[in-house]
Image 1 (cartoon, rainbow, N blue to C red):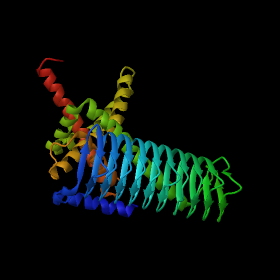
Image 2 (cartoon, rainbow, N blue to C red):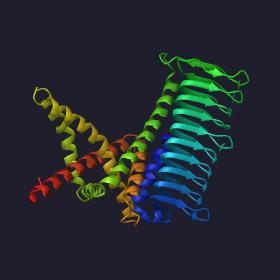
Image 3 (cartoon, helix red, strand yellow):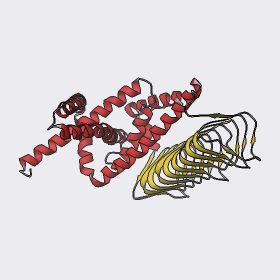
Image 4 (cartoon, rainbow, N blue to C red):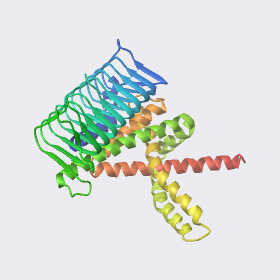
Length: 386
């Protein structure tokens, strides 16, 4: 996974910087209701965002989808990355599927691996999987054969079909129905004993680990790697929702921040670095005084919020910059946000360099926000509005 992410990140930045014509085959759609009709074919990658997104046609590349209500019943030859409220995957995806949402339902074909982060995740009968499954969420239900391994961190996990290469589960409750069969070991971490039907078959060992029990180093590494994927998808989803709120409620403000970051990148970086150091120090100084305690606490809370929001703000700028290089000047804020978040997500998987670049971008987002606020304050003072 990490090697793939590194290669993907390197290719992404080389293509963006030196060969924007490569993206000419990509298709972008952004609207309240975005549809790719059944008789439409996209010969390249496909990006779509909206309150409702329906993909019924054919995509001859990867698909990147974000929205409130999403249904995919067409054909995607490459990978699918989707984030939204309610997601239904009923078509065919030739590559990997990574889905994050409130409710995610899979009843189509997934050619390779499936990764889910959901409040409720269901892989229903009739779905065809080609590889491993990683499922994180509140309740996870798997009712179709899994050719590879099944790894899950969930409140409740129910398995009602075959698993070809063992189960590793970190759960509150684990249930294997009479239709379940596991080729390999069933290893789970839970205070509760698994509810395993007498008709279920397990070729390997059943190993229960209590949460407080020291686990094997390799198992722990796999677990934390899975958790990291979960948090990355959670950040993507939450940042997407917050970004959509800003784009809908304060579009001009978001554009001004993007203009500041892109037009004055060094000033944004410098001001962001200054704020990174000065704001927490000032907050602590205020808190040690009785009269300044409330202000210091508010400043500290605002500082922490700004650190997180700066990634959202800079995602708009990064996405817009990439779209400009592709010749897509004037593209909507939602598309810029989605593309920027994907880039930041890929960067997070690149060792050392990716973390440094992501940190610099975060500082630029922070500085761009503060410089924009300062600029707006000066304008309001000059107009004597405040």
